[in-house]
Structure formats: structure tokens, C-alpha cells
Length: 364
Image: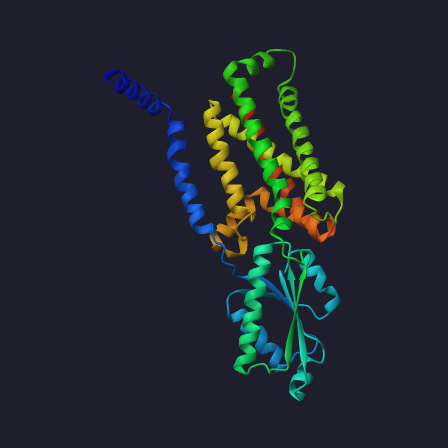
């Protein structure tokens, strides 16, 4: 018993002497709890809504006002041309579109049957399903309340994922999740292992330049990441029958931009860690969990508090998920995705530049 207690005291003393490990064991769980408490919200609110109302009427304005007043929808704009509604959904500027025909007000005033079309972006299954349900209930309540006559018939249509299959939503997102796990964790562990065994220092005393050594260490993980993309695409399209409607070269090009972020993050974690255990815990708590929680992979970003939504703008996976789902389900190209790709490029250069600077600093 005394030997066990002595061993435990030794372990606690060793832990106390390692402030980095102590920090990783205490702070990350608290941070994750706060993030989950605010971001882990499956409620759908503030869904972007675009309205096409060529000939506005009191009835159409009342119906739009009811949707916005419910707080489930945020009016992001009016589009006078129904043919351009698709562009709003393609670019992700709106998730729901409410389209009134030109003679809507006239038909309602005459007591004739009038139709109103509700278009929903089905690429995010949970958001689309809940938003469709909310909008339908609000319209039906308006009918019952007498604000809209019983002659109004809502026509519901789901774009990009007509069956609202959650598989179509989850599997494209796995491309980004798999790249994050494989490249970030493997890069951090491999470089820390090199430092632990002393082989990294041995390489640095050779005629090879530090930049060449670093490039040689990262290129294999870059190749692994691209192979993972190919594997997921094949499994998604051939096995799970998820449609790939967009450009395959654009998909791999965006994957390269995302890999710039994940490799840079893995390198940064390796410069902050002394042991593989520290690197693994750091990658899990400071890279993987925040990316999963704050990227929109599971929880809708629109439902998060404003402060948390602001934080999501520095999460690279957020932009990559938008790109991947846009290419897979919407078939959109560079005109609709250039902002996300630019964000990945800027974040990647900043992250990779910071990690490279820290790596070079450790060598001196």
C-alpha cells in the first residue's frame, strides 16, 4: 500500500511539474462545456428568408410579417424576379424562399384559389425539415386566423435534397471531418515523435535546409489527405448514392486549401507540445472538437448566439463544409463559392505562417 501511495505521489508531482499537461487537463474540458452549452442547439431559428413578391398586396405583406415576427425566419431581401431565386439558394444567402405569383393579391381579393410557393434548401436536412415545418404551421395559422383567406394553397418544394435524406447531409461533411482528423492529428503526433526521438535534430544538422525538412515531413500527409478525399467521394457516390453534381477538380482544389489549414494547425500544435500525449490532447480539444461543434457539421450556425456565430468565422471547417455540400448537392461552382475559398486561403496562410514561424523559432 505504501508503494502504491508513493507511486501516486510521484505521478502527481510529475504532473504538477508539467504545467502544459496540467493546463490541457483542466482548461479544455471547461472550454468544451461552454462551447457545447451554447452551440449544441438543434433548435432552428433565424433562418435566412428571401421573398419574391412581384405585385405586393396587404395579404402577402401580412404573411411575410408573420413569418419574420415568429423569430424563426430573418428576412434577408426581396427578389422581384422569380427566375433569380435559385441564385439566392445556390450561394447560401437564403435557406427558404417564399414566392408569390403576380396575381396573388387579386386572386385573394376575388375569393379565388391562390397559391404561394415555399422553396427550401434541403442540403442541410435538419434545418430544412424544421424550417419547412415552421413555415407550414405559420401559414396554416394565418389561414385559420383569417389573415389569409382559405383559398390560399401553399405549395412546398425542397431543393437539392428532395427526400430530406440526412445521409446526403452527413456524408459530404465527412470529407472535411476526415481530413481534419487525419491530417491535423497525424501531423502533430509525427512531428512531436520526431522531436522526442531526436531524429528531427539529426536531420537539421544535415545540409538540408529547415524549410526542406519541414516540407518533406508535411507532403506525405498532404498526399494522404487527397487520397482520403478520393476514397470518401467514391464511397459516397458509389455506395451511398449521394449525388455529386459539381466539379470534381473544384472539390480537390478546395480540399488543397483546407489541407493548408489542417496541416498548419497540426504543425502549430506540434510546436506547442513536448510529448505525443500533449499533442493528442491538444489536437482533440483545441482542433477537433471546436471544428465539429462550431462548423455547422451537426448544429446549425444560425441557432447559435451572436458571439458564438462570430467565433465560427475563424473555423476553417465551416467554409469547407459549405463548399463540399455546395459541390455535392447543389452543383454550384466558383461564382457561388469564391468567398468561402478566399476565406480558406486567408486563414490557411495565416495559420501556416504562424506555425512555420514557431517551428523555425524552436530551431534556434
